[in-house]
Structures are given as C-alpha cells and as structure tokens.
Image (cartoon, rainbow, N blue to C red; front, side, top):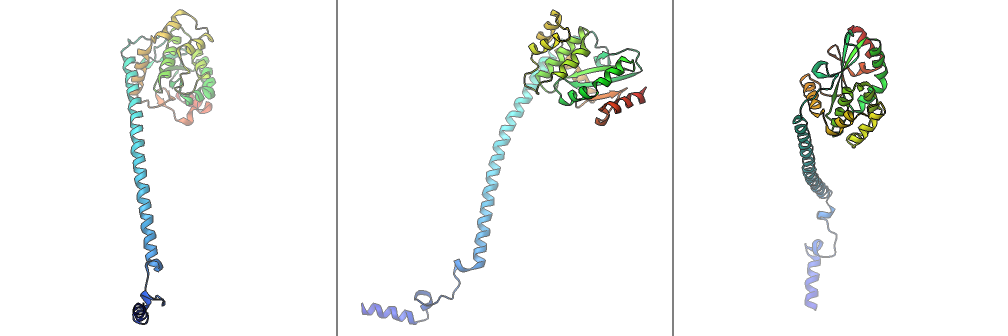
Length: 269
C-alpha cells in the first residue's frame, strides 16, 4: 500500500504529471481543437451530402424506370390505335372535297380559302371556336371565305371517335352544326366523354338521328379517313392544333382573335 502510494506520488511530481496526474493539461486535445472540430463538421456534412445524392440517384432510377414503362405503354397504345385506323378502308364523307380531302363549308366560289386543323378534344380549339367561331360563320355566310376543316385525332381515342362522328355528320350535310355542338360539349381530355353513345346523343341535338349516322359512329366507318387526314396534315407540316391557314399562309396565335383573323382574311382577298 505504501509502495503504491509512493509510485503515485512520484508520478505526480514528475514531468508527466500534467498528463496523468491532477495538474492542468496544456496539450491540444481533439475535442478542444477548433480546427479539428471544423474538419469533423465538414467531413460529416460531406458524408450527409453523399448519402443524399445516393438517395436521389436511386429515386431517379426508380422514377425513370416507371416513366419508361408508362411511355412505352403509351407509344404501344398509339401504334396499335394507328394500325387499327390504317387497316380500315378510306371512306370519304360527301363534303370532303377540299385540299387533302378536308371537309368544305361555304361557297365554292368564295375568294379566300381558310384551312382549320382542329382536334375536338383540344381545349385551345374550343377557346378559338368560342371566341372567333361567330366571326368565321359570319364570313362564311357573307360568301367571303370557304372553310376547309381537317379534324385531327392525336390526343387520344376520344379524338378518333369524335373525328369519325364529325365525318359522319359531314356525310349527312350537318358538319357545321355538329362541329359547334361538339366543342360546346367538350369533355376533359381522354376521359371517355366522347363515347359513341354520347356522340350519337349530341348528334340528335342537330337532327342527326338517321341509321346511317348512328351506324357510322358505332362502326367507325370513317376511321380510315381520319387516319388519312392525320397523315396529310403531317406532310403539310402541321404540328399542333389549332392551326389556321388563310390561302395557305399559317396564322400566328395572335391572329386567331376575331379582329386580327378578319384582318388576315381581308388582306388575302
């Protein structure tokens, strides 16, 4: 006991007392070194950032995989739909006598020809119809313009069904009235709102009740024609709807309002 105490006392009085005895420690210790603490904080922040980047990378891989599946499914659906349309014979509606077999409304001798590329599901087309449609009809009635309608079908199956029904209405001589009704009752895109039954019901509002019309809607009689219209529009450089051409010149979006549209027609003829 006394020997041990002596050894302890000796260490306390020697050069190592500050390290192992009860004296004041003047040497740098890791937890008291500001620069060391800063390095540890930077290292921890770097590890956290690396972990966050790895989590984001894994999330992006999962997201890309899911998105890729969705895109592939959508492309397959479009390809299948197009192949079905192209497999059907091209039957032209009676009034499809314009460029690329567009549906003509107005006097053949009108001095100005206006081409409309529209999709019955397109919300901007509906806006154009609501805003400028009355001006278009007044110019048709005045014999100022001949209109040629190319009903597009790129948004989805509802577009195809509506375009087919529009062609059936044209074949019955009721395209202009039916065109107005379809845009006035436009459903949400790809909601199934333009089912065949709904298209037939809307047709009845403008007197389209014949077995020929209802049969054409149900059978997709003009699906081949609808596909032909899309192909012809693509070859003409049409990439969106609505596209409006006055005597072959494409109008800007600003010219689709009533006054600028009328000015473009007056300048052409």
